[in-house]
Image (tube, rainbow, N blue to C red; front, side, top):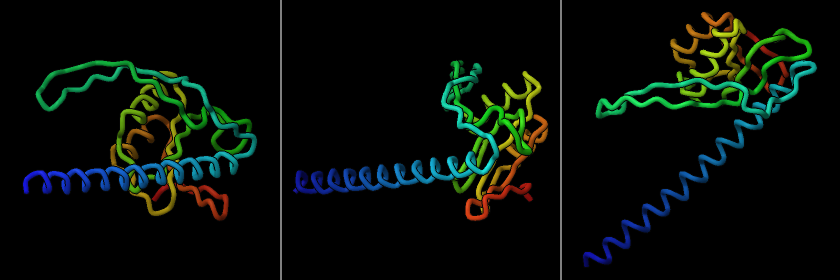
Length: 157
C-alpha cells in the first residue's frame, strides 16, 4: 500500500512540475512579447542583447550567513535614438507584481552610479511596489505604463 501511495505522490509532483513549467514558459513568452511591443513603440529604439550592467550584491540567507556575488543584467534598453526616454536605462516588466528583485537592484545601482535615469515600464493594472517606485524616482526616472494596443506610454499613477 505504501508503494502505491508513493507512486501517486510522485505522479502528482510530476504533474505539478509539468504544469508549473508550462505556466512559467507561457509567462516568459508573454513578457518577451510585451517587451518587444514596447521597444517597437519607441522611435529608433533597438533591444539591448548584451550584458552591460553588473554589481556586487550582498545578501544574508535565512541562517544569517552573508554572501556576496557579482550579478550581471541585460537591460531591455539603455539608450534610444529618439523619443521621451533618450539616454536612459529602461526595463520592461509584465508580471502581476513588480518588486525590488536583484535584476532591478543592479540596474538601479548602475543608473545612480553613472547618473543615468532608470525607468521601469509595466502594463496597465500591474502593481509596482513602493520601493521600486521610490528608487526609480531617486534614480531620476520613474515608472511608466505601456498600452500595447495603442502603442502609448503614460506615467504610472
